[in-house]
Length: 368
Length: 151
Image (cartoon, helix red, strand yellow):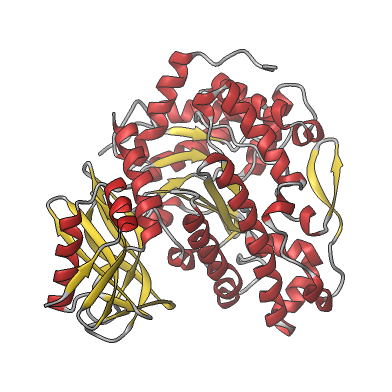
């Protein structure tokens, strides 16, 4: 069953060329825009967040419709929750009408429980909610909208997902009092997540790798700990995912404040199709001039318009911030995609997305 | 006189990957003649640029007998190596410097597009080599995407 009108093939062709531009050094009409529409695409289609997350086919179809309607990138990203692969390890989730799912009960209670946690096998992963939801969404796109078919290996953030298995506060205490158990926990989550990668690559042949960091940032850990608990595992995860057959596309999404650790991530792995995004420096969007200097030749950069502004700012404010970022990064050596710093909040006004696209049209021509 | 053995299985793999059998021998001979190769346990990894293709061969040597284990190649231009990560020590060791390689990035160019790819580099002499899966999966897919998206 098709939930949406087939996207106009002429638009898809045009959008595909535009999307390819930064990756192949072939300037097209303007830079592209990705406001990271997830359940907000469902909101625009009249769905609650809960409906969007629990209905993979309708959810991903709403993303396709929104991306065509607003002239965004021709890629439909959908994931069942950021707590991917955690339910398989014992976490219990709860869905609320207009928020992303959150943890109702952690898989383990004490550091001693970590020894009892088991890496979930590929066969068990295939029966779990993360994999089956992804398959439902990606099969639907492959069968109905093949031009939009880009399967994702949504890793997501090894240290952050691992922390959710025991609870963030306990995890943070462990980083100081019991680092070896912390490593053990991250390792077990990462290996489970990689089994998810194996299952997806087995089914689809490849998958875009989505990873990065949240807990391993400047609000919760010092740079030394970010290196120990973040950079190390993101590198290992990507290295192993590439060996499994995922990639070469990688989207590094470093969520939140990375004021003190942003340069450390250059020690992770870069492939010919890598997108780099760092959310914030303190409470302000991370300056793209700085990002460009360190990462401009390593990856295609993605913008980071303040998500709070997209939710509660005026269209003019969004437009001005989008303009500022485009002017700062449009000449980045490996290209630039205008975007929000994180997922577009559910319930954001459509005028925010329009303002981003308008800024890209007004100021987004590549100069090479 | 060194004898280079190439099993039917390796010949088939090389054929599937578009690598002439003579080139496998050429790469092995260069690795042995110059000593420019990596070593891991009983395996050797040598490479040679032949025309626009860089051919990699993994082989074992026992006395005067060499058995080819696998081979892979790519058509990207290998350029400068950047960003060595000293903490990320790789199992392959540089034969000339007797130092383990570390992970780094290599700039690679194809169709005029230059991007990075993960590689192994000797921290002393700077010799760098791609692992098999990086070439057969990451770089080969990237080349296809460059061709498709550039069209």
